[in-house]
Image 1: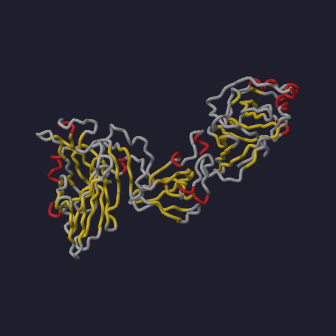
Image 2: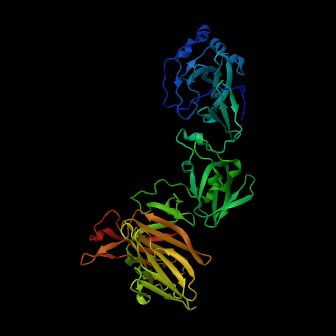
Image 3: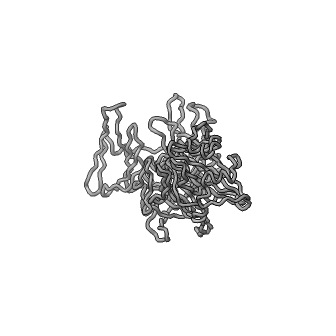
Length: 522
């Protein structure tokens, strides 16, 4: 931090802060010492009541213009400042004055600078004890030094050094630098930041093979998997350019938290410097705020990418991973390579409530439907369903109220579990992807899509979402019984068409509520 034009003296304790847009002017008493020094004009300057964090104001022309005599009465001549008749000096505000300490905001302007702002502090004897540069900006506009105030703490940013220094304001008006590095500019949230990770900027990893984490000198120290949430501290000023799959990508590095579980949260929010790494921001998805826009085919309630935990949701524009449009199926019917309707149960292995699966090694697996004596008396039922893409395996469905339907692939020779899917897996022509579509167990209008991608011999989650733009297509038959009308058609290894329904309508008799959607996986 540059210490140009100010003494390294120190300031007052402020009890909270308030955004400078909510200021008020009120009367205050003038001490005998002030009257003797003829400082009664201080009674007319604005008082900023500091209840929440705020940015210390820039120079402005609405403050009290002071003369050379008043400059000396305020003891500013005893600091590093020298009165210059070509400059203007204004008292911009008084910051939360107390019985013992007075704090003034001094603005200076001349032909070189648009303005500089200083905080000036006085002790109970009205002796100046602190002068600190808090804001400066030149003719081109924009501050190169700026200050945020939160409680008894000043955060002074210096663009020339790309640093922020934290200062503690003592009760006697002294300002001292803290020993703690500023690792996240939480003060910029102006009182809205409560010290929780969920309030930090977040971006999701785009690189499907993972994103390398580096230390400050560029050494690889780890890797973030596809779909992982990165907590963003800030970005470097300079950008770097790389080539990826024939595309040129230019972006800065993002400073991120390595291990969010090690962050001190709450009012003492702090990130240890050793818990900070760098990633290329060009391989992060932009945060998207309009994901739930119901007027868009890309609207969704939640989205999970990759093999991240189920509670780690991504907020991205769905156009990043899919191309979706309404189509007429007849236009693509001749291109359909694989078509499916709802799965068919193989009744060979089930007698009553008992499912018996024999394996070639002589072992058996017996699964029994069970009813639980709890709310709704749910029954867990098991069945074998046909699936032509797994001819040497059993595909066992497991269904119960309040849970998504699970499908487990068992090796017919050994009984070993090969893979488990949420929802019936509709496999693409070359088996690169599987797609499952199902509705929520309590609300048939809440529809889920699970797209898995084959990697290292197993299907792994690529994208799972609850769509807001359509629902699972149930219909009424001629006897007014609800039937499952779902169908899916693969027209290439990355494109499929689904039969869907308007999610806003519960009526199952209006044909205009049903339509086809084509998805292309990017």
